[in-house]
Image (cartoon, rainbow, N blue to C red):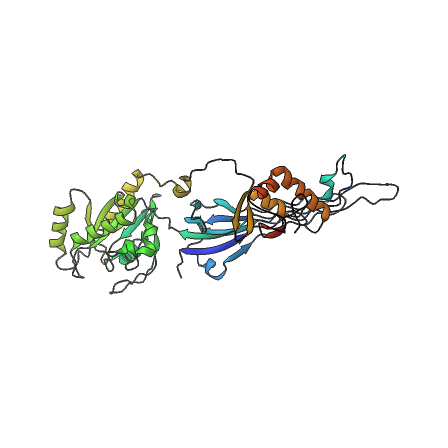
Length: 428
């Protein structure tokens, strides 16, 4: 089956916990702390692979977890970092954050990578906290949680030329004649239910990739027929070939067909209608085709090149292919990652926290303060006292007072709940 969209959950590895340990050796009194740091958690990485053609693998597995870092050990032994999880996706995959809709990457080239979830930092062991004031700290940090998010994957096929046309216009017959592609061909509409790729080899190193795009009818940009599912696959092409039923075997007017399709392309993406286009007037072996060909040339010949062909017999196909190759040699290749490249990043200093109140609950948000709480061993009174001092230096306690917190008020930081007590520790 051909799948060109998917939604997956990724979770980077948590950092390993720091170790609380003290040097214990014969003839070494008061050896001091020697707890090692935890290892960093593994990242989740997406890597483009030109050997893949669909997103079908993500239909059967939707959750992906990277390895967590090992915990620190005594004798200043640091934990091993977690292994990165590399997920292969087809070249041409656009990656978006499902929550925000932000485009994270456009993976076009083989081997191109993007880190979509970063592993958490390993917690510091108690050896890190030793100093003149506290020479024997009996606490350590917990590992930082790894990033997690839902991703939307969208595949846009990488092809040089897109064949567009109404159902039964002969696109599948044409691609099967000029390449090794073998799509299903039958005498009824919507025979082709998935895009087909074929490589056209003209010899002497001249070749190009041809895509047969199914399901384009009037209203395709709104989802009529199959167009809404597959119009995305013409966005990366450099040249469009309109395959027109010159014989009018379906009772449609060839000139009207051309205008309708161009209108649908423009409504879906205005840039598509401006792309270089040529017309393949197909089914020239059938009655009525010569008269319609003359009408096409009178109506559109001044704007577009028109090639009379018969995909069934092969008549006129070679001149069409050589002209396509000549045009491609002059057309610039699309710049990879255009969607992601247009993102604007503004570097602004993020406030350490913000406070909101909902039904008597004070909710403290902020990457810095949430990370502090997550990496603190809340069951250790010494570690908790250290966290309280950091809160005071950050101004969190005074900010809670200004927000209306009083003794016994509930405070939520990340997934942890605390009770506020003025002038003393904030107890979990």
